[in-house]
Image 1 (cartoon, rainbow, N blue to C red):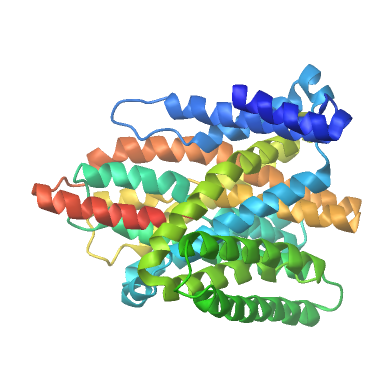
Image 2 (image 1 turned 135 degrees about the vertical axis):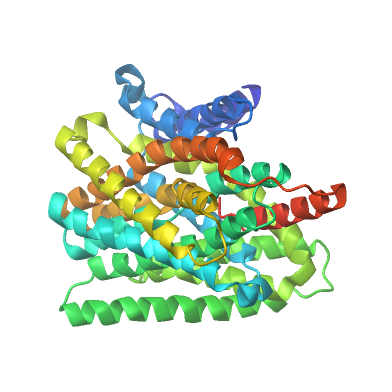
Length: 453
């Protein structure tokens, strides 16, 4: 509290009224403080034998309560451009972590089941949600697929900690269930983010359908090419003989990632920024080898700082007065039906991988949680619509954000509880030596480093 008061006092002495109630900076600091408090409160909630509730839920609810509590919302006002900028910074950090976490050697050795688990459920849920959004919410097809890809990503922020707890207890270790889920999660997220960025670029481009498709392909190509060039640049610069190399490389990878996200918007290629960030972090990380772990730790610190901004601001975007009950009901229906399709698709994807029936059921249920990716990209469509100053597009963007908000609110806690309850009952417990346990813990830590949240 003393630290926050000191920060406020310093900022107030510089900006004056901006840091008083009703000012933009006051609103940002107020929301950040209570988002951190909300995350800490949820972090303290521990139920025996169950994984901890994600702190992001507390941050999300803090922002939601600040926006929808009459007295508080009157003096907590945040400029929309500032809100969008802070969320985009957090997005660039998430994507940087995802790119750095990918292991080129591991990707080459991935079994078919890992790829099936990453692609099958994500694409099935995306397609289902797109059709339902078109039928129920009357969204255009491009917007339907935008909402579909928002829903299609699983949340490593929930899955990875839960898998590490089960792995430490020896559950599913012999069949490699925890390792499979943690490895496939990163690929699943990258697929969803890439698809989202492509559809976002198509939705905001004018011209024929063929032009929009070609533009989407162009944005993907631009993102990959720019990411590859920038990644190769920072792979060798700064040079190996410099002091504080990890800090300098962290600065460059984060700085270029933010430039890619904001620059792609400025130059009219909004769909290429996220993909560029993923590629540049991956390409650079491949060349950094052993030093990459230290850089990942520094980037993780940056994420811990900006995480409350992301989830707090997402929660603050959702106003009860602007939500129509029928829209909320339709969004919940879309989410529920899409989840059922995802569970069935997941079961089918692992049906011929040597798992027994209980293990297939567990993997299907463990693929439910949604959180970080939904928060990161769920509001981008609304932000882009606001820049175009089109009320109809803003309505579409608000529908997408509502779906993302409800997905986090419903599936994150339910998914964590389901994994914690079902794991010990559905997975076989292995009898391992202490040495094997240590090796399994190391594998879990490496998988956690792949987590983009």
